[in-house]
Image 1: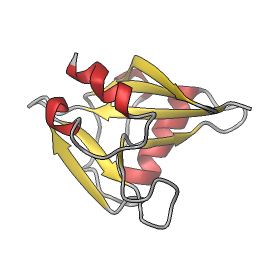
Image 2 (image 1 turned 120 degrees about the vertical axis):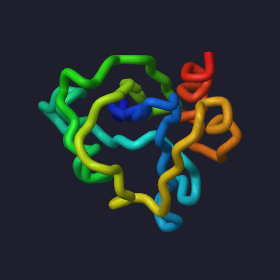
Image 3 (image 1 turned 30 degrees about the vertical axis):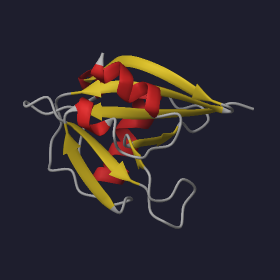
Image 4 (image 1 turned 60 degrees about the vertical axis):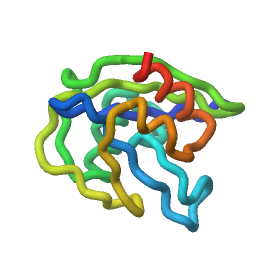
Length: 125
């Protein structure tokens, strides 16, 4: 069974992207990842990402602010990555231990779950 996951490369005016660190008690705890989460049954991927960004970061994103960027798979997980350059609010770590803004080349040095690694490479490309 494939688990469909959506994630956002939130990108600011300086070209930095936001990553969040997973809480230690969760699977892949302590690793850095793109914000996002699982798509619920019957939910469109963009709608799921809008919901997840509100739940995880306390920001408001319009569906038309999400541009499909890439995808990656790791076993049973299929992750769709969207770029987002417009949102309302200041991202806060509601579901993560910490947030990190940096340029993609430096983000590639962070420890992260295997499915996120090729997506950071796309941002660097």
